[in-house]
Structures are given as C-alpha cells and as structure tokens.
Image (cartoon, rainbow, N blue to C red; front, side):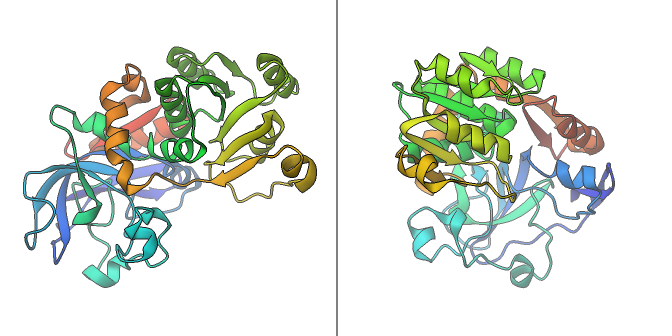
Length: 338
C-alpha cells in the first residue's frame, strides 16, 4: 500500500509500505477519504512523521473472524485505539480512555495505524455504518470537522433560543457554526482570516468580528442587549480567545473549551466564574452513541458542502499540506487511492 509521510520542513511525500493484516477483532479498512487535521503543524515545523492522520472513512476489506462488520461494509472510522472495556469506553466516552492499546505491541509494527494511507486497522466496535447514498467525502466530515463541536454543544445543551459565540473558524470552528445554524441558534464568530470569515457569513453567522479588535467584547455585549452570549465554543486554542469567551459570556452562561492549548489562562475565580455563575467544560469529541445524529446533520444541513473546501489526491500530498498551512481552507479531504 501507499501512505503519506512528512519528510522534513514543509516537505511531504508518499511511500510504499506493507499491507497491514487483520487479526482478532481488528478489521482491515480500505480508506476512501481521510480528513486532514492538525498534522500540518508538524509539516510546517519539520517534524518527520511516518504515520499520519486520525480520521477516515472507507470500506471493510477483510476481517479475521465474524464480528460487528462484514467485508464490503462502508464505515466511519472513529479515532484512537481505546480499550473498549473500561467504564468510559462502555459509556461511549471512549476518547477519554486511559487504557488505549499499544498498536505496535499488538501488531508488531505501526503499519495500519495511520489514516492518510490506503489501508488501516481498527477494532470493529469503532466502525460505524455510513448511510446509503452518502458519499465518502461527506461521511468524512463525521470525524473532526463536526465531532468536537457536536460533543461540546450537546454538553452545553445548545438550543435555537441561544446566542452562541464561536472563537476561531478553522475547520472545527466552521463545523461549530454549521451545527449551531442547523439547531437554529444565533451565531457570532470571532475570526481574523478573511477567507474563513466569509465562509462564516455564507453559513449564516449574524456577525463576524476581529478577535484582535479591543472593541470586540463591547460589540458582543451590544449585539446581545448588554447580556452577553448564552454559550461560547472556543475553537481557536489561544489564550486571548479563551479570555474573550469568559468576558463575552452572559451571567449563567456556558463555555466549552474545544481548541487545544497548553498556554496558561489566568482565571479569576470569583469575578470570572462564581459571580457570573459560569459553567465551563472541556470537550474533546462526541459520545460513541451520537454518531447517527452527526450523520443526520451531514445528510440534512444545506450548508454541508461549504465545510469541505478541498478534496485532494494523496499523490499531491505536498499540495494538500501547503493548502492546510495557508489557512485558506475549510476542511481538506485526502483521497488515498488517487
């Protein structure tokens, strides 16, 4: 098979690799579409990486024994390699599993662990059927394009009566805008890249504000009659965006931290949380039991095609990474067999 690799600073390519072999409940999946996510950061930094990607959709190519799927099934491949046995996994919160499998120890190498490849291996319980008539390119949005925001909004109880602030309109933030509009919520976005700001407007965001403008918090208050937003979904992964969410939230508002960030946010417990009555949650993904609801949004949203801006053959992986690094995209979908 072929798989994508990062060879050095802003250099990517495609290499030949052995076809992985299924065993036990680990299923061989032929990858038809793989979403590109934060891997571009390693591409820009020059971190050589042999096994890329964590989201995919495809077709079951082989099974070692009868199980939950059969050869020919079209499936969404859910991320990571959780144990499937701990209380978190059994409750559908597998992404938080603390006992994930050591892929190389199970299979003797890491071949089959990557999604930016023609084949991968995955336990059958992490494969979910794709509805008839849905393309692989659209089904690929059920992973990191819609997944993080869907989980966050479900935890916050977002409704059509809410005004929601989305900070950062990369692919995850754009997914948040799409879901909020699907629900019928009023949407305000903080985004500085004009390409993505324009996409938010096309999706129906009422206002798209510059996060660097010192007047943005006051503008949000003006737009909400002085109250602030009911919900904030932080997708930028930056301390200034986190602070904007706190400052823009209404009393008794809800905030979900979605964007990855290791920098320190200074929270003033009393004025920021206690006296405002804020509920803050960290949200990584959605529950295993919610896949059908995510797929329903893909099937029903009239905005869905705005979320996948580029579909690129894996043979052009250099171009695909340059696109991701440019930030002039929504979700980029890779086609491993082209």
